[in-house]
Amino acid sequence: MIALLVGRFHAVTADQARWIDALSKVADVDRIVCVVTSADHCGTRRNPLEAGVREQMLVPVLAATGKPYQLVKVNDVPESDEWVAHVCSEVKRRAGAELSPATTRVYTSNREVDALFARQGFASVSSEVNGPTPHELVQRIVLGKPWRADASASTVAVYSRPEVLERLKAVYAQTLLNDDGELGHRRDFASYGTQMDAALEQKLADLLPWVRPGKIVDKGCGTGKLLVALSRLYPASALVGVDLSREFLRRCDENHYAAEDVDFLFGNIVEQQVPKATATTVVFSSVVHEVYSYSRYSLAPVHRALASAAAELQPGGHLLVRDGVSPGLARWRLRFLDAATREQFGRFATEFKQGQGAPHERLGADEVRLSAHLANEFLCKKDYLKNWHIEVHEEYGTFTPQGWRDALGEAGFDAVEVRAYVNPWIAEHRYRGTVELRGETGAVLDWPCTNVVVVGRRRSSR
Image (cartoon, rainbow, N blue to C red; front, side, top):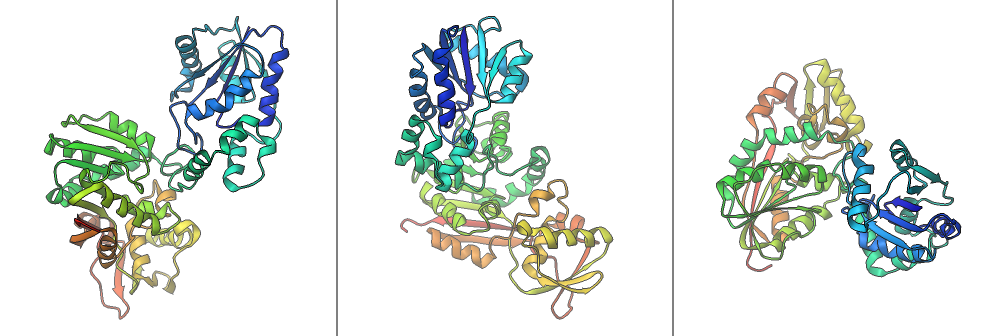
C-alpha cells in the first residue's frame, strides 16, 4: 500500500513529524509518496519558500520512518476539479508510481484535500494535527515569537539559516501583496483591467513622445496592452513587463506581441528587476500611487522604486510616469449637485485611507470645506463604485508637480517634463453636473488636474 502525503509543506511542525513517523509502524504501508504542491510558487505569504527548500525540511522526516519514500514536486493548476488527476499524473510521470483507490491511502490533515480525493474513491486517514499549523508556525517565525518547540528538527535547521530567515521576512514585508501574491484583496480583475485599458489611447499619447527604443520595461504592466502597442511600434526592441499579480501575468501571456523579445517577470516594481544600466526606457503607468497606498502611505518605497529605475536605466535613459497628481493643501469648497454625490462623499469622508477619513467642515447640507488634496481625491475616485472597496483606500495624488521634480532629482534624474493636465472626458462626464468647486474666497475654480506626465532623464553620474 502506498501512503500518499499531500501538502504545501512550507514548514513541518513537530506534531506533523510525529504523525509521519507513526507510518513506520503501519504494517501494510510499503512505501511513502510525499507530494509538495504549488511547487512552482514561492515568494508569497501562502508559499514563502521555493520547493527545494521545503524539500530539505521533509527529507529527514521521511527518512526517519525507515520506509522507502519518494518526494514529488507538483506545480499548481487553477481548476480544483482537475487537481487530483493532475497530482496522480505527475506522480506517475516523476516517480513511476500508479496511484489508485486500490493501491493508495491518503494521509492528510487538510479537509479540502481529503474531500477532493474522497470524491475520486480514495480512502483517507485523517488526523487533527495538534499545535500550530505550518502557516501559523511561519507567522510566529516572522513576528519573532517562540516557535522552535512546535517545529520539527529539520524545520528548525532550515528556518535558522540567516539567508532563509531574511528571505522569509522580505516576503512578509511586501505589504503590496496579499497571501496569494496578488496586488489587492478581492480585486475584480475584469473590471479593473477594463478600466486601465480604457485609458490606453491617452496613455500612448502621453508617453510615446518620450519612449527611447532598446530595452523598454513596463513596471506594473497589468493586462500587457501597453506592451502590445509598444511591440507594434518598436518591434526591434526588447520588452519586459513586471507585475505583482500572477493573474495579470497570465493575461499578458495570452496577448500577441509583434516584437520577438518579450519577457514577463513576477516581481515587486519597487525593487530592481533588470540588470544595471541595461534599460533605455522604464515606464510606471498608474502604479506609483499604488506603491504608496499599499505601503501604508509611506513615500520611502516610492523613492526606492525611482532609485531602482535609475539603477536599471542607461545614462540618458528615460523614466516615464503617468499617474494622479495632488493640487496641494489649499482650502477648497465642494458643493454637491445631486444626492448620490453627496451620499458618496459621506462614505469617502469616513472610509478613505483605511478609515483615516477626510477631515472637512460642513457649510450646509450640500457644501463642505476641505483641503484641495482631499477634494481632488474624492473627485478622482467617486465614480469607481465596482471596486470602491479598493479604490477608496488608494491615494492617487502621491506628489504635487513640484514634489515630482524634487523626487526625480533625489533619484538621479533630470526633469525633462512634468506636465499636469485635466482629462477633458473625465471633467465632462464625471465632474460636470455633480459638483461645484470654489476657492476659499468663493470664486468658481477650474477643474483640478486629473493626471501628471513625468519624464526624467537618467544622469550620467549620481
